[in-house]
Length: 106
Length: 121
Image 1 (cartoon, rainbow over the protein chains, first blue to last red):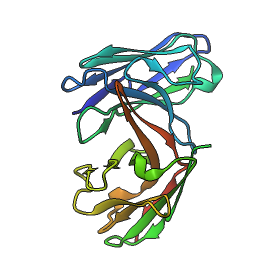
Image 2: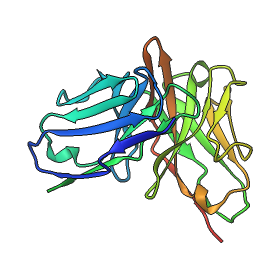
Image 3: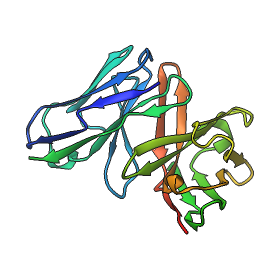
């Protein structure tokens, strides 16, 4: 199953609402997670089961979707949110990540 | 506290082998599915392998099938990744993570800090 993330890069300002999409090449129900990656650190789990916020993750992060189309939304971008974001499908082997979305400061 | 600590990375020549280790603390490895994921600047995150709660249940990315072997030693609470016939495309930071599987729930968390593997002559 291929995951196509868009955009691959976006430039935004603090306070902006940001939406990242992830499209699966076939249906995966809601078996999708979102991760935040920063240089030199392990990926951080943000969302699992497409829309469940991981404990300790700020509520400005939210996820939605099922089947083939998913979104990650950051309601008000904060300085610490500038990072790269990945979706991951855990429905079918081989498991696959999206290509990533790099969020940079405008 | 649940923690994972990888080791075993380093510089290896093309065609060489390396074994990565992932020592777990705060939980029992044999009761959990585990995974290896690698990260490169060019490709981003790339799933490598999973071992289920039963040691015979193993899964691999097509790119490593036949070359890499995932295993664990329950007595040492340690996960391994044996990597053979390494190529430049295997150069990456390798992470281990716990694969949580439950009703309506699947995700990788927590992760270790990663270990760097460099394949170069």
